[in-house]
Length: 371
Image (cartoon, rainbow, N blue to C red):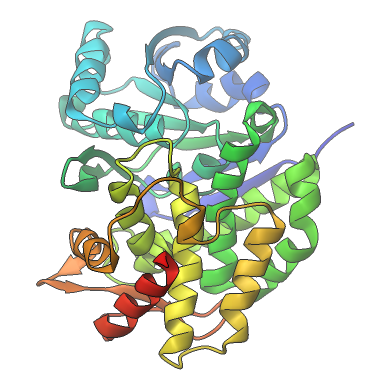
């Protein structure tokens, strides 16, 4: 059976690139990557989960076009996004004699994409790289738009750089090896796109997400395409987040605080934090009279129908109190001149950025969510 192939363009002038989305993209990776190379060799960085599952497929796809591949495998998990592994990656790339004209391939989920993109940004003051995202979360979000970073004990993604990839290859075939939990965590970022800017996409998801989660390839391709198109349009308008791009942080101010509270551990995956954060953002919006009371209920109902974490009580173990969570939110990158910017909503598909949010209301919503 032939599946659709979709191409999304990220329009950034001379740094524009394509996102190729389909089923079996890895098998054709050589054909996509080859035109970008000055010599037929690439350096691939992957992790201990993705490597054993998919590295051979990538290697075969590259070899079909005569491209030689060396690879480094890092430990899987959020804890890898740190100075130690950034340093290890950069030193390895230098050992491989990666030059400015060469290509580095980030082959993994969001952690690998963020870390390897940052390594590429600082190696020789910037070498080109290709994102080959292997998780749903990375395919719809972190691989697109050129944000690269590692984490600090002070918070997520606080050390990083804007460095756009030269190409993104999203093969939905590899999503078949994700655990249900990882797939649904990635789905948290998919829902976010409908909630922030396209009610028709959210409505499409309400109808189609169950079959998409069950493995419908065409619907997976369509969900990735729709998400990437929305992100590409926003990034083209506002690459370095001076305005509109902040909308992509819907759910993230709450989510990042929850991730920090759980020590970036397996207790809460990034996409789970985003989903809970979106529900909280709509709840606060409703309390402030920005959107109807039905909207947060509809958001939570959809997340619950998908079997996702929806409330603070869905997170195992203890959490800080409302003031503790507020303090963690204050550490976010989106703080300007000490003021926290929130992404609120006037309705499903209508998010906006504001600093004019009553902290008392936020504290009350958090307090009630914790009890």
